[in-house]
Every structure is written in structure tokens, then in C-alpha cells.
Amino acid sequence: MKYACFLAAITVLSVSFSVTAARPNLALQKTAIADSYVGARTPAMAVDGVNSGESRWENNYLDGRPDSLKGDGWLYVDLGTKYLVDSVAIYWEHSGSGKYAIQVWDSNTDAPSDSDTGWTTLLIDTALTYTDAVQRCLSFLKLPARETRYVRMRSYKRLWNPGWGISIYEFEVYGTPITTANINFKEQLHASGPVLSVTNSGVLVRTNGSNERNITADIFSPTGQLIRHLSGADDSFWNYKDSFGRNVTNGMYMVRVTSAGKTIRGRIAVYR
Image (cartoon, rainbow, N blue to C red; front, side, top):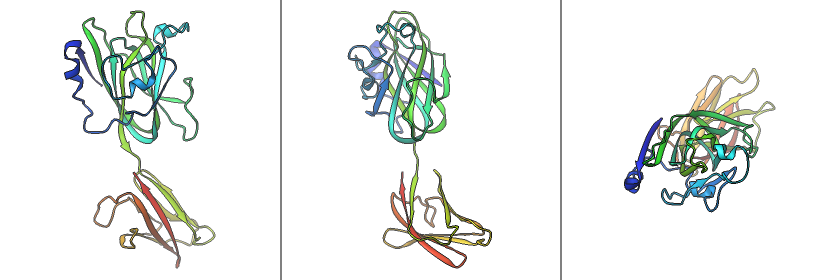
């Protein structure tokens, strides 16, 4: 974890530099949802890219819930698609959280729960400190890399006791795109067929059955140029690279799989 706290007099200068500037903020202007908010300090204010003034989210400490004034609340962002998330940056207003967790939603289909059920905690932080002169603090948190679409800050208590809610200027999420492939084979090689497994690092092509021990796969560009030939005793693995070791660009690729003297052709659409 890295922390940096800024005085009000140097706020604008300090926050113009980011420890994550080399990569885009995946949460920027995405959909943000919170358990509550007060006044105009909506969840969207925490992902609007404006790190100053009243452009911040604050949980509704006035809503009468017994735990809300204690800093019990949450905020999550919908990244729109899955990423391999590895870090989070939170720009806290001085009314921060004394204990909070960074969580991800692992389900592929379900919408995130408003309760704690279904969320996986990657990190719990209790290291924020309060100083009267400090107006804001940056928490930069390295996480165990996790594939997810939803990232949540779950607060359990306030950092101090001013009578206000917990407050965040900006909630930023960083990671890398996940390569996916959509595979469409119109023909069948044989009754057992080919088995294709898609991962973030490539496509594994293999066959079912005890008699199909040799398999080759040829990958062609959209214009028909052979860009990769693969073969193996049991399977072939395409790592989205051409024969020179270069990553292929996004797009539709043709694949020809041969095993036991039979051939099928199909398409693989690669997206990053």
C-alpha cells in the first residue's frame, strides 16, 4: 500500500500527478452504485474524473440507520466488462474510513448483491490516519490480480468522529484487458468433435477419443494469409501470436483443425 496526504493549499498541484498515470483509469465515468448518498454527492461524483471541491461521494449519515453514522457503507463501480484488476486508488476526503475492504464480485451472471453475500474480499485496510490540517489522502492499493467486472469499497467504520459520512473524491481502478475468443465451428470433425478451451493467454485445441493422437491447427488472417501453424501429439495451443511471436490484432481469424485424417474449418474472433 502507498499513502500520500495533501494539504488544502497544495491540493490541485499534488493530485495532478498520479502513481497510476501510465495506465487508464478503468472506472472513469463508469456506472457507480452506493448504499446511500447525501445531497448532490452521488456515487457518480466518485468516478467523474474531477478530484476537487464538492465533486465527491458521501454516504448518507442522516438517513437514520443505526450504522450509517458509524461509517458503515459501500460504493462499487461497474467496469462494463471483465478486466484483470490489480490495483485501486482512492482519493479520500478527510472524512475517510477507519476500516474498509476492497472487494470484487466473482459471479459471471448475477448482478452484484447489496449485502456482503457474494463479494470476495481482496484486501482490508485500517492504516488511514486523521490529521486536522490534512484535507485529503490518497490510498494506492496493490491487489491480488483478479478477473472481475465489479469492484467495491466496503467501509465498516469512520476514520474519526466529526458527525459526517465517509467521503471519497475519486475511486479509481486499474488493470489489464482480458483477451477473449468466440469460436464458431460449422462442421464436426467426428462424433466426439474438437474441444476448445479459451483462456486469457490463448486457445487450447484438442480432441476427444482414444484414437485421435495427432492434431494440427492452422491460423489464417482475415485475408487468408497463414500466420501460425501448430501441431502436437495431443493438442495445439494458440497464444494469440503470429509465427514471429507478435501479438495479433483484434479481429476475425480463420482456423483449420486436422486430426485423424479429417479436417474442419471455423472462425475465432479475438478481442482485447
